[in-house]
Structure formats: C-alpha cells, structure tokens
Image (cartoon, rainbow, N blue to C red; front, side):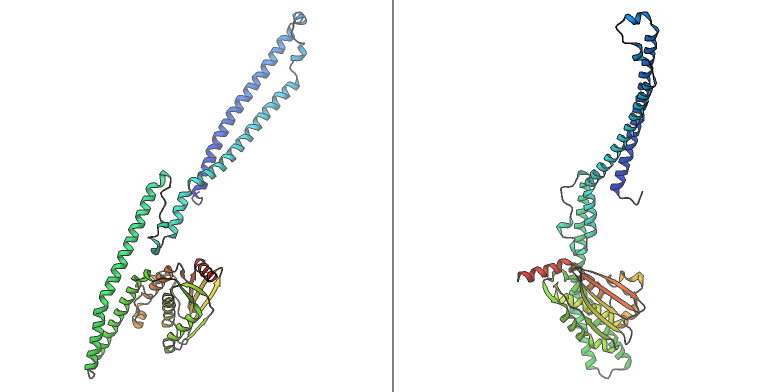
Length: 396
C-alpha cells in the first residue's frame, strides 16, 4: 500500500467504501425483494384455496373460474425466475456503480491533487541559481488547504535566496580584501629574496615555503572572488568548442609534458554561453586530469551532440575516484587526497567553480565512469541552449 501513489490510495479507499455500501444495500434489497415475493406467492396460493372451497356459490358469482387462481408449477417458476433476475440485476448494478465511482474518484482526486504535484515539481527544479526566479514560487490561485503551505514555501525560497546572496557577498568581500595584502606580501618576499641571494639554506627554504603558501592563498582568494562574481557574467557568446579545446591543449602542454601525458581532443559543436567560463570549466577539469594522472598517461577531451544536447567528456588514465566521493568532489574545499592536493597546490575550489559554471549554463555534470583505469567526467548542455543557437542562426 505504501508503494501506491496518494491518488491511487484515495481511489481504492473510495471504491472500497462505495462497494461496501452497495453490497450492503443489495443484500438488504435482495432480502426484502425475495421476502415480499414469497408473501405474494403465499397470498395467491391461500386465495386460490379459498376460492376452490366454495362450490355452489362460486358458480353464480362474478369471480373468474378457480382454475385461473389455482397454484401450479408455472406460478412457482415465474416467482423463482423473478427472484433470480432481481438478485442478478442487484449485483450487476452494484459492480457497475462501484467501477464508475472508482473511475470518478480517480479523476476527481487527480484534479484535487494537482496543486500537490505542481508543488513537488517545483521542489525538484530548485537550484541555488534560480531561488530568486519568480516562476519557482507557488501562484496565489491555490486551494484553501494549500495556502499556508504556499506562503511557507515562498517565504522559505526568499530566506534561502537572501542567505545565499549574503554568503556570496561575504565571500567576495573577504576575497577582495585579501588580494591587496597578499600581493604586498608576495612583493616583499620577492624583494627580500633578491636582496639576500646568499642566505643560508634554512632561511632560503623558509622563504620558499612562505612564498608558496602566499601564492596558494592568493590563488584561493582569486577563485573565491570568481565564485562570488560568477552570476554577473553574461552567457550569450557563440562558442565553437573545437578551437577552444585546441587553445586549451596548447596552454596545458607544458604541464602535461612534465609527466609525459598525451593530450587529445576530438569532435566539435557550437553552444551559447560565456566563452571565458566555458574555457575555465574545461581548463579546471583538464588540469585536474593531468595533475592526478599516472606518468605516461593520457587525457582526452571529446564533444558530441546527442538528442539535441551537447555532451563534453574529459577522460583520464588516473587512479580513479572512490564511489563515496563522487558527489562530494564538487563541494568547496573538498579534497579526496589532501596530501597530493598540498603537493600540487590544490585548495579544493577548482571543481566547485566548475559546478557553479555548469549550473549557470543550465547544464549538468557527473562522474560518468571511474575505476583503477581512469575517470571520465561528463557535462551535458541542455536542448534549450542548442535551440536558441539554431534560432539565432536562422534569424541572422
């Protein structure tokens, strides 16, 4: 019963109640009908016997001949047939009324539960990037029973939107305030190193470590600032993916050559979005694939159109991502292997930025495959952006 939808539960309960009521009425009416038919037959039999007992008087009376009223087998058959027909018609009417009522209950309950289905569909569409969209809120023309839920739901969306805005504003302000002192620290460290070229080994190692950490903090503040300002970037560029992947592979070739990793790309498509952000998305995924790859491995970027959608895949030959971490890797500051992330200077923000860019373009990203032989990351851009691209090309 728990696996059935609420609409089917209401339908079955309504049908059961109606069937119980109809069966009870049929039993009562059947009993009453058979009882009164038996009484009619008994009365006719008694009357016939009385008529046949008056011999002389009956011959001169106005009554018909006694043979007319004499009980016989035909009369019994007629009464029994009427009782059987009456019982059968009762059960047929009961079945018909039950089925018709069940169908009507299913239709009526479906109409009554429509606001609940709309409510559920809106819940499924909620994302951090569309909390301020008025289309996500429930309309005012809802049944009385849903008004309190509607008001609570709309207030919840407003509070969530305010919370996300405040969080992003704080992150952006903090990152912006950190940029200047970090840049100043980097400049002073470089100046000190230049003025003291003959410093002892311990001091040189300390200055190198301090410089690396300062650079790491500067990169982190830059990424945080990009995350906070992401929503203000227009996504209206016409992007050819093949030239973009060619540029990307050229920029990452020096990093790939350090581990003798082969970079390949194939396919082409055109989509509408932010050229800068799409480049950053593929750059972060490809850089991760190179850094966490095996030596003498490979990284392959591929593009294809399927069912009107554009799919991009970044596949590597690394050690894979454990199954329990495949959703968490897109969370800010999450790192699967913290020791390797420190060695490569990772802060756990690269894939978080990727996810935000994907959401901004109404796309989706997931770990399509991951094992000891490598990992494949997949991004799917929706039909809507492809359709808007076709419409714009036809107009031009």
